[in-house]
Length: 117
Image (cartoon, rainbow, N blue to C red; front, side, top):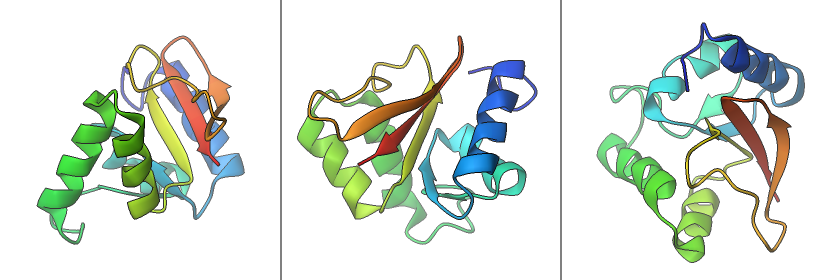
């Protein structure tokens, strides 16, 4: 993902701002640092000084994005009460689930957003 100044990311932020204010978003640590201020959302991991149990939470976020295990990923989403996932379109974790628990709601060349059901 090309950061908050990229047109695709800006469009995703606009989508979150219009549809997800106050909800919990799982995103990369780099994007989570600025999402609350730009989209009015809460993030799983933001800044280490502002995230309770930051080390464990950061590990969960990193595990989610690198794991192929559906049960592990769903546990992380449930544990952190995640409503939305924002990720780079080319990340392996950025695919709809077969069971309908992750539904793509926004897509551009660089960014995808999924609703967690």
